[in-house]
Amino acid sequence: MGTTVLLKAELFQRTGSFKTRGAFTKLLRLEPEERSRGVVAVSSGNHAQAVAYCAQQLRIPCVTVMWPSVSPQKLAATRAYGATVDLEAADGVEAIERAASLADEQGLTLIPAYDDLDVIAGQGTLGLEILDQEERVDTVLVPVSGGGLLTGVAVSVKAARPQARIIAVEPESSPALTSAFAAGHPVYVRHDSIADGLGAPEIGTLCFEVAAPLVDSVVTVTDEQIVVAMQWLFHYAKLAVEPAGAVTTAALLAGKVDIRDAEAVVAVVSGGNVDLAHAAEYLTSPGR
Image (cartoon, rainbow, N blue to C red; front, top):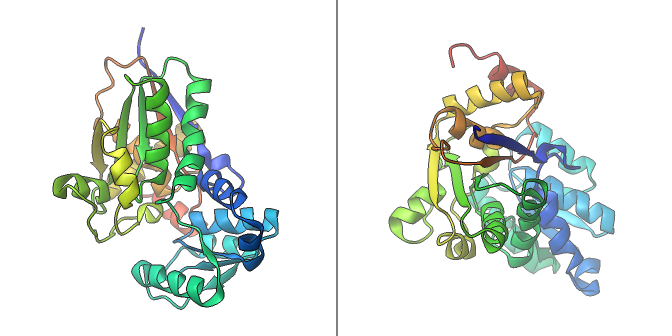
């Protein structure tokens, strides 16, 4: 028998990505006083939407710090979920500083996008679901940027199935984990990929400490390979996926992962928040 390859389609979550898992887990663990003061998050989009939505459901005041170049679709969705959006930062690095300042000035609780035990635990529920849904799984491909999803999935899968392989996938032009492995610690990287959802400036310190011993390998994919994967997912799986959500499929299609001896492979499709203009551009791009 051949290898079974499955897609864990997180784009069907309420805010279009896996991020609601960690956001709900973190917000539910806040003390009543913290809830009443409100929360602040910094994100290029998916984490912002998730925190805004979860805060709305729990009636917690929410501020999200974004920056002018983020996806208009993600910006609009974050506002639609009831968050106050702060656009004073010029880029992601400034946004992190801005969020920390707002937290201090207004008494808000900062909700990290990845480097937090509660957030990691929430993202780890995805790994538990994979194990429940496919008992034969022996290889899991996970997108990585800041590392919260990778860390949560690696911990939950390896705890139950130590022999399973965890393969991290990241953009070639934004290699946060690859650079961290080379240096032996998290390092800043310049993000230059269409996968805006994988644009963390570095992998989290906690995430790297926990995930590094559990990750079997890390592979990178080019933007061209990501586009090919988006087209494949749209035409054959009927999934409208954002670039960040397509990286694991890109790794498989490009032959970056040897699955010949695997019994069941799961590729995490992490999100589907892509605006129509970019979706049309990527899906009609010729020669890729």
